[in-house]
Image (cartoon, rainbow, N blue to C red; front, side, top):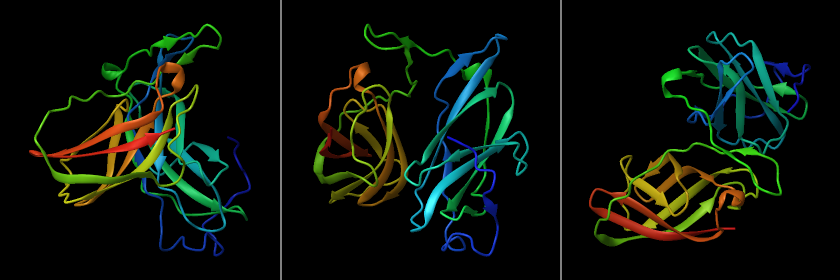
Length: 250
């Protein structure tokens, strides 16, 4: 990532659809913490946003700081296809504010997205587990939440398809990969309380829920940590009703 100092902001030649579309932007769980040379925890947060569709889209910029709408730092995402960013070296017991912009091939920048904030809480942080393979460098594993599934009767609801919206559902060798998926079903009656489980995928976040369609964000673990590509069972539980289907992860 590199910072572009000559990106123009809030001009008349901004992105073609800037007035009708802004970046949907939200905060994902803090992934891991590192110890710096002063023995103070330095946290990391991962930010995820919706992909813009402007034909001249060139990239994004992430702004952050300790004061709302007064950002002291920024990170340039010089690709229209990257919609995640990890911010490092955040200090405990401080609140950080984040916003995103998009810019086009002429380096004309959009307005800020909706702002999100996050306070680094030392009571909930932990030092990550480190895996040392015999033939590769040391990598830090990702801490993700675990979920408990409940066995319920299977109804006539069927998951017809599970597809990625942008990038292919493919696991990496060394690093985990975020993917946004769309799940469609028949005879479904899904709502915001529906629970989604995918075999070998612990990290699943619902982004949008309709009665027969759910958009979600998943984190595919790397093969280095034992993840095996293949066909995975998908289950969506709503009350006493369960919809089942499969998804193939390469």
